[in-house]
Length: 329
Image 1 (cartoon, one colour):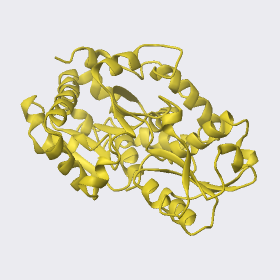
Image 2 (spheres, one colour):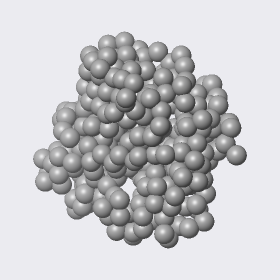
Image 3 (cartoon, helix red, strand yellow):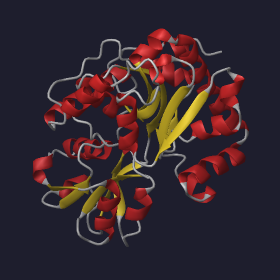
Image 4 (tube, one colour):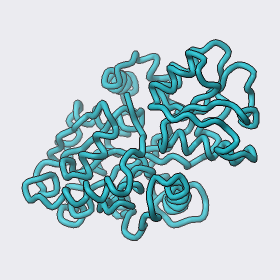
């Protein structure tokens, strides 16, 4: 269950964009909407929408494509093999920086605890990480969370020995005692906390709004087929309402798709905050604090440039389109 990695660099994204979405027979041509998603609690509601017939209720034909590898879903959107994809704001910005034309139409959720910095016994604060070996997946939102936590503690990445590993490997290395701390997301947080005496010393809950998860469409599709985009956004809010009214059945559907038990899935609930209509509207409004997408996008863009994941700051003009959320019934 791999999610949330910024593995498309600027050159790669430009290549994908050049290969991409203008194919008249591809995902941008209308007809069936191909919607990609992968392992993250804020994206499993799409499975509920499909199984309960909520797309059909809104007269839109949607083919869900589930990706075991989150990075593959990013590539699929960039090459025009998806109409839209559930992905972090970080990853959308990375792709846009390389030339991919995308439009964000919905905020699915914010991470509010399911991304964590987990440390070995004896390390009780982020400041204690100075001189320690810390593993995370390079360029992921958990790498970003690590840098935010270090900055808050008056440190930088230079003050730790950073070990870049894929998230599953990072969690395993931590459990094996090969590193002193790890940045990971659920469900790999559960793996990491299996190390006796380990504890989370920083989580995404400490940085409200820092990790938004969104639905990003091919920009041309949004221009050409606004009715279908509207139907997908409407379905999301219908699905959230259905889940609220049928929590037990919804959990069973989502847990099965995630490959975990219903009880394990319930433990992730507080760590992922599904956005209400009001939170969506507020997020799309320009602002100067963490509740607003444009504020977070500028902070994330600085991170991408400073870590050399992209060469230039991605353009934000036209990236956020709130009209579909505003039109939800």
